[in-house]
Amino acid sequence: MVVPMTEASFTPRVFSGIQPSGGLTLGNYLGAMKRFVDMQDAGAHETVYCMVDLHAITVWQDPADLQKNTRELAAGFIASGIDPEKSILFNQSRVPEHAQLAWVFNCVARMGWMGRMTQWKDKAGKNAEQASLGLFAYPALMAADILIYHATHVPVGEDQKQHLELTRDIAAKFNHDFGVDFFPITEPVIEGAATRVMSLRDGTKKMSKSDPSDLSRINMTDDADAIAKKIRKAKTDPEPLPSELKGLDDRPDARNLVNIYAALAEVSPQAVLDDHAGQQFGTFKPILAELAVEKLAPIGSEMSRLMADQPEIDRILARGAERAREITEPILAKTYDIVGMVR
RNA sequence: AGGGGUGUAGCUCAGCGGUAGAGCAUCGGUUUCCAAAACCGACGGCCGGGGGUUCGAUCCCCUCCGCCCCUGCCA
Image (cartoon, rainbow, N blue to C red):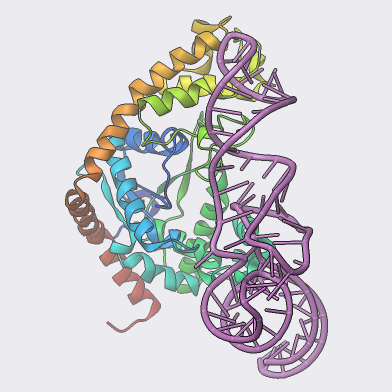
């Protein structure tokens, strides 16, 4: 594998990872998976998608659950439209170069950089003493995830922007320290109209797998009845749908349902209002439920079909890892050369 | 490492020798165009683990584990 040495000649390549920590929701699907599929199908970049199990264990994971969640996430990727031949799909721990490059980056990154990460401060908080060392070092592993592929583009949500900045800092410091132009300065791909899917019980909170109420979220494994029920019980207000988006400004719950409809139907929110302005929720909800069932139930059943064939999933991931290593092995080897490891 | 505190339902806590209770959360019902609010109801706990005293331990004693605070040690 030829390692391109100038910005212009880096292979256009997208890397993105999702933690297999369980509970794929509609938010993951509309916010990430669907975009991953679009990028894959657009064909402008090579696409590398990874279940980051090594990141997951920065906080406690039950081993049996972790295995199940990893396979379920893989099933979710495939059911959502990721083609394991078009894209490279695998779980992180199967490609050891991630962890190996992360160690090198641990020695490039500075404690101070890590300590400033807002996600670290949020998650560890005042209990930093009992947080794992891995949670602190997390951003260095993430930088390795990206740079072991020389990824030029990474789709990032607002919450990951700071980590990508750090990835760029690490790449720049590495290049500077060793006097090379080896790692690309990865560009963020900011989603335009990012679909932020909010809780069905509280339109001001993000839809989350950890919300105590299962009615607050739609799981990708929910069947048609569950999907319909959750939409029927979703929080709303007493007003009919407005004809203009402005009318949703202070109606987070209503806006959320409109946004979900728009994302599922692949139209703009305004287009949804054009069709449904004046409707009461008693009318709108069943229509939305029907749409959601139509779009999501097939994905859910495909997931369970795949989950029933575990050897097939494992085979796909093993194959994905093989393909990944064709990229990562030469880049790690070159990195070791640069750093001065005798091989 | 030493001293002190603490560990009871998902969460915050009450109980303190006779095998547990509240609020909130969750779920269901009534209501409502659907929801929300309100009201009604339900679910939910080897009372951190082990040992001991006792007729009997969540409650007393010992020990282990986890967490919090202070001091020290190390750097």
